[in-house]
Amino acid sequence: MCAKPQPGTGGQTYIPPQERDGGKAKVFFTRDLSAAGLIKAFEAVGAALDGKVAVKLHTGEKDGPNIIPRDWVAALLQAKLPDATIVETNTYYEGDRYTTKQHRETIAHNGWTFAPVDIMDEFGVATLPVEGGKWFDVMHVGAHLLDYDSMLTLTHFKGHMMGGFGGSNKNLGIGCADGRIGKKEIHSWPGAGQWSIAYEELMERMTESTKATIDHFGDKIVYINVMRNMSVSCDCEGTAAMPVVTPNVGILASTDICAIDTACVDLVYAMTNAGLVHNHDLVERIESRHGLRQLYYMHELGMGEWRYDLLDLDDGGAPLALDDAVAHVKPFEG
Image 1: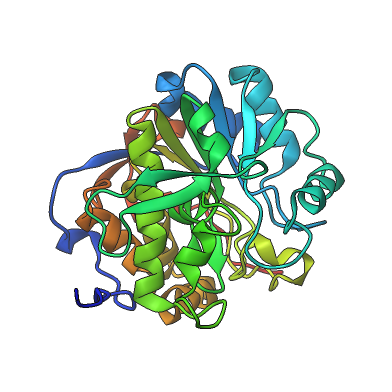
Image 2: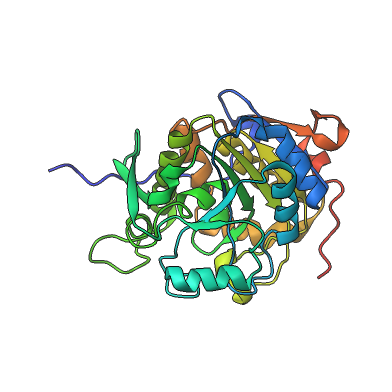
């Protein structure tokens, strides 16, 4: 009988950029938190998307205050992806998005009516291989995921009650896994409680789920992270989310999932160097949940680079230092 895999370490320890190894990816950055800024970010990375395009985003619980503004998304789709479909899956927890009927009611309530929305596990599941995983050989995803040729991963970067932070990795790893099998495989040991897996093991399981999706799409998947209204809570907490205590930063885009999530985390930590102490709650949430393991495990699995060049879209794509990228950020006064 094979021994149970053991989770890695490091989820509580931040490794600064100068201590990382490997190659470099490109991450594009704009301070412009608006529909125009979102379009600018997409234009930097979106050329590879073709065919039937899925837009994976978190449409939120009813009246959730912190999701990406709908008018921004509507403007982006109208300008750049007029035939795209927003995609979601049902939740593992019971709430307003637990069943397809409840989920569709919530989607309509929240105003996602300007584009088709596909609840990918509405009619069942499919399996995708997990190459090189320690926890999974396959991951169960919404069956309709296989209907798409390419994907835009559009993510509200924020904290998360179990993951520490929610970036592109969480958006795909949890958000493409179906609500009954895939999400259960990530969160729970058989015969144990519903949320029995946490810390490094949870980060690794979530990341392996993500790997199944990005391997499926190959070079036909890109990532945009919006660093705005960053509570320590996920958008799945809706109106019960903790207050926003982290200053807004900007919008990032990349073709490398590890690099974009790493850059977002780096920008949170860089606020300390810039004298902005209002990153404390989000840093504490990331480290207390061992969330940094997400980044390190993506790198270990060959999903991307944890080194990158940050390129300033507001200055013609010029190289940008982390401290300079948060120099415009004002201390939080809310």
